[in-house]
Image (cartoon, rainbow, N blue to C red):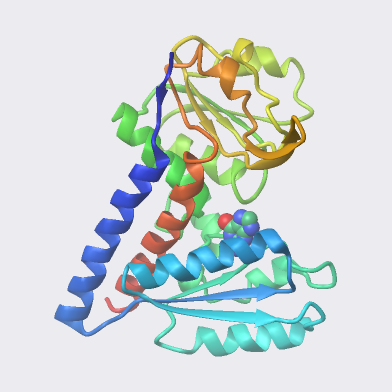
Length: 286
Ligand code: GUN
């Protein structure tokens, strides 16, 4: 059976390191890192994430501001708020929770955030910096995956990595990060021909397609490391359950190591958000 990668424990270690660093920053430089989270509308899943972000931000000793805006908020009003946060020196990180309501242009909104405060790493400048191997804000979920992979393998150089999913939030930045660590990277997706065969080539298989339990054990190379980014709510035997993009039961019998859902990648995302906010505060203060 595969080794189970404990993302919950890993995330707790990252948060403890962030908290220790925040305490030093306060004591030695009088700086308290601060994160502003903007939520437009009342999407229930987003509400849960935003609450969790606020709680964990306070727990590591940072300032946290939540801006909850009505669903009918105009682009101009949202961007005016972002402008205000951009020029507020107490705010080091700004996160606009996605998805935004349909009448708002997410690209326009995200690109109005000061790139230095873009702790999600979604601003076009950060995307470009990451793509050219320069210092940038790195999207939190792929960063969390990379940290777990480095912890497990040490050096990833020369490994064959297959990323299933091509989103701007996970798939594309994940591929860039793996390339940066000298993996041979394939980006596959729902239209890829012979997807099972492509997956079977992977020493590192990252699943981020948003399709419940799509990747089965017979798609996994024996001994491979499987990172499951999926969080899908489905019903099983009449009960709601959370499953990943990987069929855990069959994949765990073939893989060398695997992240569970929940308790794998999920907890690492917010831990990396806190780490990015700390990085932004350090950079803002030289
Ligand atoms: N919605 C789903 N994932 C994310 C994320 O990583 N950042 C933001 N801002 N919204 C999201």
